Image (cartoon, rainbow, N blue to C red; front, top):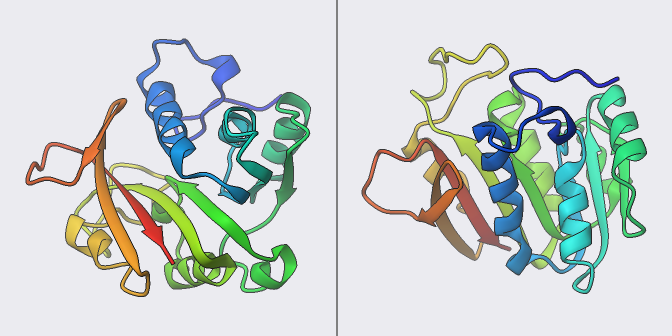
Length: 203
């Protein structure tokens, strides 16, 4: 049985009022207007987000693939979140062979992944190489002190500063930033009160 941890969202084991759960659900619902064609949920965790996208956007998507490094988590996703348009596979987001193994996608979603990945450049390169021309990337990460600085989260390599996050996507044709606090997602503004950044990029 998949265990609930501070870094793992398992809706079946959480109260409906849990702030972490609501925050994660809000991000996936935010994706729905952007989804089309073949979709990748990069570091999908227990699979609930993959399921949300496949079910709500079923008329717009042809396939939603969830990938996660944890075999246990993928087994749980397969048992818990079946949908005819979704599938789950074990994989490392920083594996340079992923683009050749998985092919191309119209949309790639990756929430709260970047702060866990030591091979940041390879992870972002994989995303870019797997995204079709005109494709959409939606990615989020919590803000922090920046690369090389400690965080209060034991599972995080680091947490990027706002400036570091804003400078990650120069190769995309269109880039739009958003902030998130709880379930509220708003366009980027001058406030420093929002702890999470979300980017929507078009290749």
